[in-house]
Amino acid sequence: MKRSSEKIDLKNLSPSELNEFLESFGKERYRGIQILRWLYQEGVQSLDEMTNLSKRFREELSQVSFISNLLPLRVELARDGTKKFLFQLEDGNRIESVLIPDKARLTLCLSTQVGCAFGCRFCLTGKIGWKRDLTTSEILNQILSVSKTLPEKRSITNIVLMGMGEPLANYDNTLKAISLMHQPDAFKFSSRRITLSTVGVLPELERLAKEKISFRLAISLNASDEETRSQLMPVNRRYPLKKILTLCKNFPLRPRTRITFEYVMVEGVNDSPQDAKKLLRILKGIPSKVNLIPLNEAPGIPFKRPSEEKVKRFQEILMEGGLTAIVRTSKGAEISAACGQLQAKEPFQSFDSIEEIN
Image (cartoon, rainbow, N blue to C red; front, side):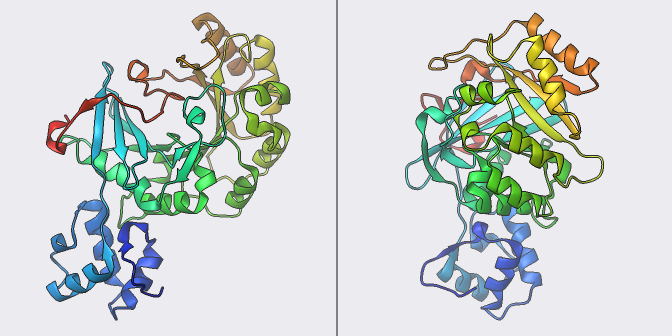
């Protein structure tokens, strides 16, 4: 990697890119491990804090590189403990992250784009359209920033990339970020603790199938036939359900892993017993489980949430057919932090410093 006159954000570099960058200074590879640990395990915000690097080396680094940071612009807290973080990026664009508590688990839902281009009709993010991709550092800084708000003995246990945007439409930056989440000298998240959710962007799914992935894959299905899925998800006209399922049947999964299919349940659209039976048929032969997500209603969404009885019956049919089906209780709906509700809008409660967020 050639050094350029423009300063490099160190958090945009993969471990191999970081080593290549350091070699341009004539530095040993172990320096890369030191820097990774400072960036992601210690969460330093300046090069001066890297005290096991010589002062001269730090000064050299500061001439050509920097460490980016994110501070929450606003935070909103729901009664169930869910927190929604609003971040303003350097160019003025805004994104949201959601921290979801569940017993001993703390799951952070990350954004990968500003807005989304896919326009799923049950999702508010799609209504604002796509503005730009996030850089690797902007994805990772959501983890670091939220982590700094946690009490000393608490830490993020799970990562889901299903906030604002389509992760596979920002393929390179997203995969680089995940590799650093998984990296032992960086975040050290187990592959079982990272989930990437996609609407099913076929070229990128095909590309992903050729790589050794270190995360769980979730596909937003939401229907059991082409017509209904196209009604809910315009992307289905370009990447049809049939082709997605064919790819899933041949997807190289690690031993004892399954593809998660997310199914947002919409009153009168995809919630009938017949829909459940069709879903059983189309998922046959795919190592899978289904997350049933009753629609989170919101102004601007032209659908209703089905009754608990309908959801329960739908789940029973799937389970009777031998499929693992879990009804996901959405958290944070009162602060528009639930699935499909992110828009990066104000007003939230404002904080002047990290210490105020508890």
